[in-house]
Structure formats: C-alpha cells, structure tokens
Length: 181
Image 1: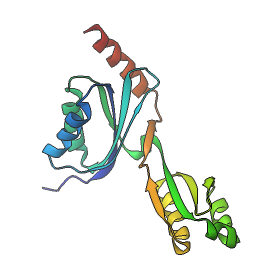
Image 2 (image 1 turned 90 degrees about the horizontal axis):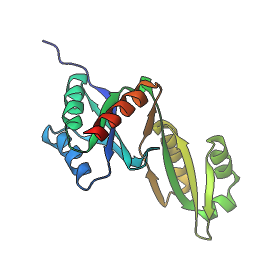
Image 3 (image 1 turned 90 degrees about the vertical axis):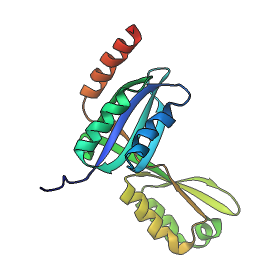
Image 4 (image 1 turned 120 degrees about the vertical axis):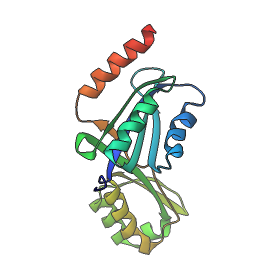
C-alpha cells in the first residue's frame, strides 16, 4: 500500500461575519493535527460575506474531508479547495531598512528597481519598501537586502483568486440557498 502524496492546497471558504467562526474553522484543522501554512480573511465583493484563504500541505483525500466538515459549519456558505494550477496568488511583503543604506548606496536602489518593488515611506531613520509577488520573489528581495541590514520584515502570506468562473457560480448558488433557509 502506497501513501498518497502531499501537495499544496488553497481552500476558499466563504462565511457570514459572525463571532467565533474563525475559531470553529481552525478547530477543524487542529483536531486532525494539520498545520495551516497561511491564513487570510477579508470581506468579499458581497457585503457581509467574508473569504478565508487557507493554504495547507496535505493529501487530497484529507482536504476533501476537511472541506466537507467546514462546509457543515453554521454560517459557512461555501467551502472549496484548489491546487496552485487553478488559482492566481500573490503576497505582499514589507521591508524596513536603514535610510542611510538608501542614501549612501546606489546599489540598494538598483536592487529595489530590479525587483519592481517600491518605496512606501522614507524617514530619517528607516525606509519601508513594498514588494508584491510570489513567495520566492519576496524571499529573493529579502536575501538581496539582508546584507545591508533589515530592521523589520513582514509577509502577508499568499492570497488567491480562482482562475475559473465555476467557483463564483457555485458560491452564488450556495449563497442564494442559505438566504432562503
């Protein structure tokens, strides 16, 4: 018997904005001891409906089971999952570096430009740079800036959107059904 291969999956969960829903969703992962690699929650284009983008590394069999369990939760409208092939995803990274590095060295400016990053703010003591891209791109910029001194670094984790319209039509059908109930 061979073990099923693990892959990266992104779950798209839609819910109403109710207290405790995030706790109930993450409890499903905790019960089976599956680590969440990234979690992002934001309001959708539909007022009062929130989208949870959850990135995990697991088997498809387990992801199917989790998706069904989450969809049974009260206030969850729809739960789906995708592999990276079926989604567009990006993350935002912020880098705080000493301003002296920006003022004294032209090389840092060239690095920032080559990575299509932008300067958000410049202060006497620090400069904040923003980079949007894939994890490996934001990490590469980090690696190139690190020798100059990074004061702080934060990354959002990937957020995603489906490449297909099927998710939208499934969501709308589920939302209409739940509003009737």
